[in-house]
Length: 358
Image (cartoon, rainbow, N blue to C red; front, side, top):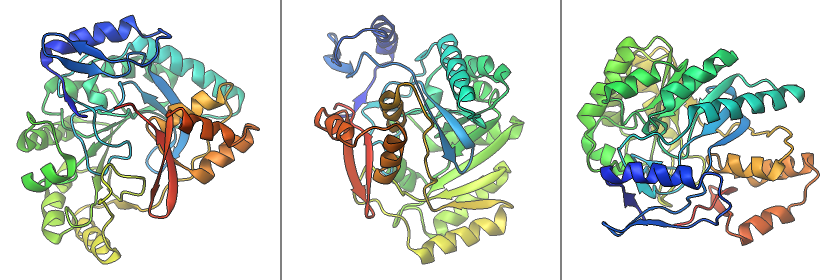
């Protein structure tokens, strides 16, 4: 079930989230009586820090998940976390910056004792991080810790001047540009009904003109949708004008929201790559999954679940982690039985991901 949140209900949701933040109450639904609409399924949501995990773009990355499950402006067909359940474009204070700073600071101290030193602190929520109006303040608090900060955004809210201002605080910003063609954009990203592609593209361009950090672009290639020469030529003109540090071409390697989603053929992939290379100095293909090795943790199962909230892992990766913690696979079976995790197979690989209640 996908929910579109009315603007007037956002503040009410934030109040309820804070009220239940530390509650032991089981997951439940909150319904607004005036509209008869469920606001969110899990009122006990808390901000998570996960990893660090190895990243092709950010090296060893400590992730911050600061949004309620699947709260986004898009419902991308390839999303590794499934379809969006709470669809909104209304920015609100979903997190407490001081809380984020404290949790990150504590986790860095724990990792330092294990000899682990992350390269990047990354805002990579299980939704769109710029929906959080507290994002800029959280980045400002974290920066004195001396580790570069990064935000992975679908860029759908960069037409907001305050969103652009807040992202200026980050050392690295990765923006999504899956298509610059209206029809394809709707088919791939399935945006909220109030969003306009021309406004989003203008917002991305304005941000790139003044941003002094490291700008990445990411284009997820889907067979039969945005892998044609026409699509690539149109996208590369726009992306090239942004002058990104690196333009990444990604493939849907983890389980997508829709079963019919597949990566392009090798022939199509190379054709698109060549078009990008002709216009952009640095283009990289994200064709494989980096090996994920979670560090030791005094709460190993919670650490694993926090990672699976936003980062599906293969069976081999989880087995390696459990073995390092002297834990048995029966724990995973129990979590699946309790419907906390679920197993999904794609392209011959079995993945495990958080099972969000619908």
